Image (tube, rainbow, N blue to C red; front, side, top):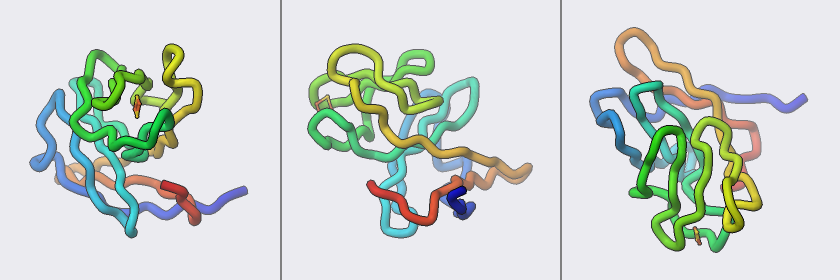
Length: 111
Ligand code: FES
């Protein structure tokens, strides 16, 4: 069983609904995606050709890589379509009542 660490990443005030933004956490680039359904966390690196996912178009729970358009489910990191064969690591998210967003990172994150 792998250990996880809950690390603060950002606040809700820093992330508008229907937007995504990358934050450095423990030396890693973590992408937070906020929709009306909640906040989701992914590694900010596409598994197709390793481009940053930040700024990718969002539609429902789908996130599209800005480089070539690979599509990933932001809830799970699983890929949809031929360019998304390899899932993007995804991380559990907690949000406190005062809007602090924290992400559960495994002890060894490979992003
Ligand atoms: S690098 Fe993301 S789709 Fe190619």
